[in-house]
Amino acid sequence: MNQSKFDVLILGAGAAGLMAAIEAGRRGRRVAVLERAERPGKKILISGGGRCNFTNLYTRPDHFLSANPHFAKSALARYTPADFIRLVERHGIAYHEKTLGQLFCDGSAQQVVDLLMRECLDTGVRVFLATAVGEVRRDDSSGAFTLVAGTDAFTASALVVASGGLSIPKMGATGFGYDVAQRFGIPHEPCRPALVPLTLSGEAHTSFHDLAGISAPVIASCGKRSFREKMLFTHRGLSGPAILQISSYWSRGDSIRIDWSPEKPVLTPLREPNARRDLLTLKTTLRAQLPVRLADRLVDVAAPRSWTNHDLDELERRLHCWTFMPSGTEGYEKAEVTAGGVSTDALSAQTMECRSVRGLYFIGEVVDVTGHLGGFNFQWAWASGAAAGRAV
Ligand code: FDA
Image (cartoon, rainbow, N blue to C red):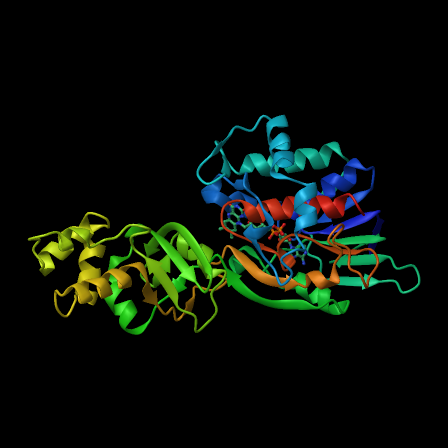
């Protein structure tokens, strides 16, 4: 077996792992990053439709889900969007704000991967590609970690697990990081697909599946959470930013509420003196606010029994609180991230080091911190990576 020694081993050359490597490399640590894939940052490359939504200007802790909502605060405060933007600008990467503080490359996501790899090179970090770690060992007396990848063994006193979550298995996502946590007795929160389209079945599917491709600006709510963004019908159910966002808060058995006309009454024209009250007028009124086929379908499904003020009130209420009962999600195949993961109770919020295993760190998506849509997940990867990289 070929043995190599380093100060720090990082498992995974994704956003979090590369950031941790750079920060540790800057401090003069001898760092090895081990990556199963034949190229680094594969998820960065497919992110943001190929343009990488690399951060969000309005990053705040309430844009993240976790069993402990306070956990992410420290790391997010110590590595901010401005820090990453400075890096992007130093590398001459042009970018723009698309909407709601979301920053994208003008060119391609490859520029972000190139930036990270350039920084690794400049700080002396060694990145081993096509190196799948199959086993993690720890020497009881020295506390040193050894990662075994084929016939190679890498040893260091610090191990940073940055192996990502379960989403997009066809890109090679596995639960390896959770297995490592389990092997060292680190608890983890149950995982579930998040930022994921929802599926409909039965009557709801029959009534709406042929509207696939139609979208509308809505407020989507589940429990106490609401998102005002676009919703999209798909052949299997519901998607679009509003649904992806709310999916992170959805559990089986929950209903999703849709306001088709956010903060604006819909039926005012039918209430005017001498206004006609019939199906055609109702459809015309809705068509002024929504795509024609959607407006007509909502009327077909929810036509009032009569045209009394009471029934109009009832319909108005329903149009602001339309209920879908999703049958499920499209699963990890379509989920942008994995919610849940390594329990934050087990980690230091300052360094991401395990409280019970000295020298073992978890960062990025493998940890139970999940961002909203819009660049927050990469900001968590940068921030948690920097926190660990400055501590190892
Ligand atoms: P990540 O999954 O990126 O990296 C983990 C690495 O570990 C992988 O390269 C994997 O191969 C490697 N690995 C795993 N097991 C291993 C083993 N045993 N041995 C060696 N290597 C191993 N977020 C955002 O903020 N803005 C956006 O625009 C998007 N867009 C987007 C689009 C799509 C389609 C998806 C699926 C996801 C996004 N995201 C996003 C989410 C974002 O991509 C995600 O949160 C980060 O990539 C997580 O970074 P990590 O470094 O934690 O894991």
